[in-house]
Image (cartoon, rainbow, N blue to C red; front, side, top):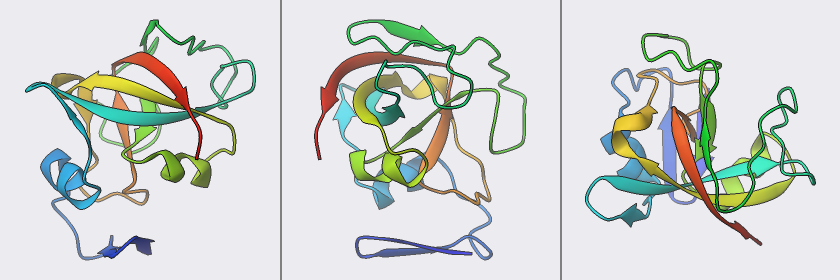
Amino acid sequence: MIHYYLQYIINTKTVKSFNLKKFINIYNVEKSGKTKIILYKSVTDSYKDFHNGTINYKVGTTVTCPDWNNEFTGECGYGLHLCGKPEQTQTFNKGKILKCEVAIKDIVVHNNPKYPTKVRCRKVKVLEEVKL
């Protein structure tokens, strides 16, 4: 599968060692200090997750994944899924877009992703709602 994003083309059949550094560089992810980055999440109008509607992403709060599994090797599940750019979130679910701060230590990137625009996170701080 080939994913197009701005001037970058990621062929996920040949990229076998995708990692957080590549994710940050390819999508020019905003840094927040030395140990955190800015990522984006799409949520429902009531600020809930789209998957099962039980996780509340209220602005100003810190959200921790209830079923986090750092050892999980799959791409989807067992984490809060966020994107490097606001517009990327709308590929998965068309909803409100939240800007979040995430510690690098709380992020897992699949090394051969089907969806290279998203990462799994253990915990995020919801900073604000953003408009495209």
